[in-house]
Image 1: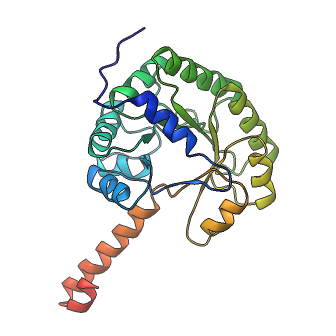
Image 2 (image 1 turned 60 degrees about the horizontal axis):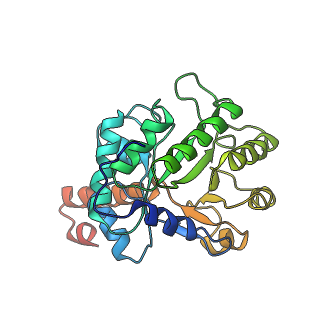
Length: 258
């Protein structure tokens, strides 16, 4: 068993705390963070866990999302965030950056996080990773965590709906990933309540909340166990910064400070 140079926190306990927060109908709410100050604000607001969002972490570091950010950059950002808070941290690891399962988990734990989001888009070849291959990868991540003494919380993202695929394929991938050891299934952009309920019947489900979509309470009523917002808080912040900057450029004190 490889010894992990862990931060001064009990990552095994963090993982169990995080896993226990996935309660169908009373979901874990995640206001995704991208740097230590935002993570601290999220924790101070009363959120019981912090999740990162690669769609923000990557561009903030000068890279495109979808597999373009070097692993060293990604894990350094996760480490800074984890060091800034005391609650459990789950990290958006995109497609895993091409790292073997063992190394991926070792680096996750070394950064101080106890959970991960893993997507099944194939950023190198296009489309989706073969479902059986992705299930094997999830199983390997599960085993690596157990070998290293931390039953990491795996949030398996299903990108079928994002890529306008068939609902039946999304459900089949959800079944495979659950059987392989995923703690939660994340059918991103799934919006059909009937299909959400079919996913919920398989186990814990993560949905993305967004403007114009279902209200948080409506999502919870479907039995969802986890709700995240991805890059949307960052986008709202940037919109406000631009609004304030435009007001300042026009010597508009009211628009600047409101």
